[in-house]
Length: 308
Ligand code: NCD
Image (cartoon, rainbow, N blue to C red; front, side, top):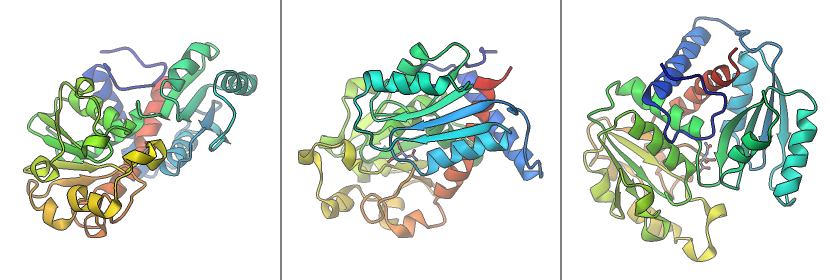
């Protein structure tokens, strides 16, 4: 049995049994909530800081709900697009907030690697959980995507998963690859237009293609990604209508996938750009289940890092 995690900054290189333990625990949390356990007191008396330097709806709200459902106190510190330079300002903020006796920091930052820097600088005893750093990692999203898939397809071994869209800028794609690769998915196809394709050397275990019609063929799971304009150079911005034509998921394209393929998207959705409403709201969509699972996965992660 692998060791308990003190921090969660990435899923890369996490042992499979650790990933499975977190998914199992998320399911226990879900069952506990479903059976009327209004609030667990696992984290009573602990204080969790949500430190968000980038906007967020789902992730911030669900971390907050997760912490409250476990009985913790929560402080929200939304900085939005702070113009303060990184470095000193970040650590000043950290030490100021730490002086208020925190147990965990949940951090989102546009600079990749910030959570690991916080791990190095945080006071001992303070756990750090990554809620998304640059294009590098979004580990709780990777876990909630894996959980959503597992609930419909319990055996990962025969699965083909396609992840399509702005892969280059996507921390979700990276954490999904780490989670699903770690869980033994048969094949992961990454599909993007050339300008939004990552370096192939970063994904030696995946198939990379710019042909979505071919990529979606017989796939069991289709994960669509948002065009992250805020991370793109102006020259990389695709024409939206042309993009939808080649990379949008509509009903006709979904028919190429395996029967009953799961349709997923981390949100926020750009309807009519990467996904048609008929699919996002259609019978194969698991998008709202992903959101619901987000709370249970974050409960599991907070319980793990703060467990005594
Ligand atoms: C994602 C993110 O912030 O990385 N959203 C999320 O956490 N649900 C994906 C995105 O912003 O496109």
